[in-house]
Amino acid sequence: MTPRSTLRDRRRLQTSRDIQRAALTLALRLGYDSVTTEQIAAEAGISPRTFFNYYLNKDAAIIGTAPSFDDDTVAWFRASSGLLLGDLLKALRHLLCHADLDRGMSQLINRLLDQSPELLPIFYGSLKRLGDQIADLAVTRLGEDARPDAELLAQAISHALADTFRIWANDDAMSESSIVDVIAAKLKTLRGFLEQA
Amino acid sequence: MTPRSTLRDRRRLQTSRDIQRAALTLALRLGYDSVTTEQIAAEAGISPRTFFNYYLNKDAAIIGTAPSFDDDTVAWFRASSGLLLGDLLKALRHLLCHADLDRGMSQLINRLLDQSPELLPIFYGSLKRLGDQIADLAVTRLGEDARPDAELLAQAISHALADTFRIWANDDAMSESSIVDVIAAKLKTLRGFLEQA
DNA sequence: GCACAATAATGCATACTGTGCAATATTTGC
DNA sequence: GCAAATATTGCACAGTATGCATTATTGTGC
Image 1 (spheres, protein in one colour):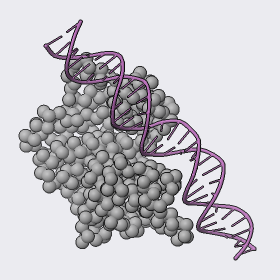
Image 2 (image 1 turned 180 degrees about the horizontal axis):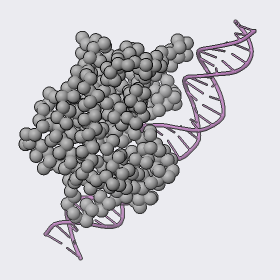
Image 3 (image 1 turned 120 degrees about the vertical axis):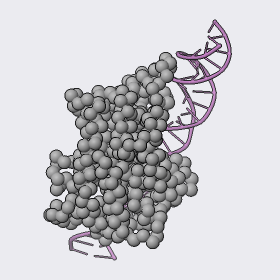
Image 4 (image 1 turned 30 degrees about the vertical axis):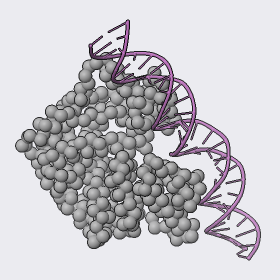
């Protein structure tokens, strides 16, 4: 996951972030629909064609590249014998800790989503991919038969994460490490609602 | 919600379904990416331009138009003093009962999603809109402050619905009315996982 | 029925998205 | 430095989606 620190890789990472930042700031200033990929490329200092070497489409540039669980975490999870939910949250903690979160970028995303709610599905599409990763993790312990249940749990966790992420982005006093704690609290609330089932 | 039965409205509904059916069958036969909006329009017997009068884009034509809660149901929900989750499920039951579900169409959608998983985000985008409706409903009882919690619950419900819908589509023996019962069972399982929180 | 208003369908022009491919430039490892 | 690997770019092109003007169809009041 952490990039081999060759120059090429560092530049690649830098360019992908330049593009995302350009896409976000332009969309905030001019409105997402009005911004063209050509403008974004110009702002990011690359050619229009190169834009599509980095992101499959305009949407993807807004969202950026989501982190994924590294092999060590997956291996640890498989081997652990703790409670499922607790271990999932621990894995999430690792993920977030290694993801070097950028609060500024997160704020831009949140502001853009406030301003252009039509982009929410794109955001939730990306969130779903994270949910799928969590579901995969859970399935390694529950077995393939339980995939639908694993997905339901994973969706709840990833949705709680999205909520919490928003809170974190807008509260400079909130530490990264408390994100998972807030997620746990939210899931507790959810459990309360489901108690009635 | 149910259309005034003027001829114009019936034709409109018919055409929108023709388009969706055309989009689904062509996508299943040729692959979603290979199918053009022009082909879909031809198959549905309308002009290419008219396609976009019915659906905002190609994606929307695949998913079709999701049902929404009618005013009566919303009013009933507001006034009811039952348990939140139970009442939400009751509202969902009304919705499904009035939605005249088309099992054949649902099967086509499920087969397409199996064949082209890259379409899943589109599907979940539409599911999110249903989730938002459920969240709105819940908020009328919990108050605006609890919206994040309401959304979390609503997402869980709508995800369970999507699961169940798939099961229902592929099982001719399963009745429409049992959909909500299966949803309730799935939420119970979720509660079990969250018990550990 | 008929005429007229409202609504829907269509054709056309046009801007933008996204891809394939070939050519050029940059980085890397030796 | 030099050759191989990789990245960037330009260009051509198919497809998406929108606005607008025109034509066709449906609904309404008489």
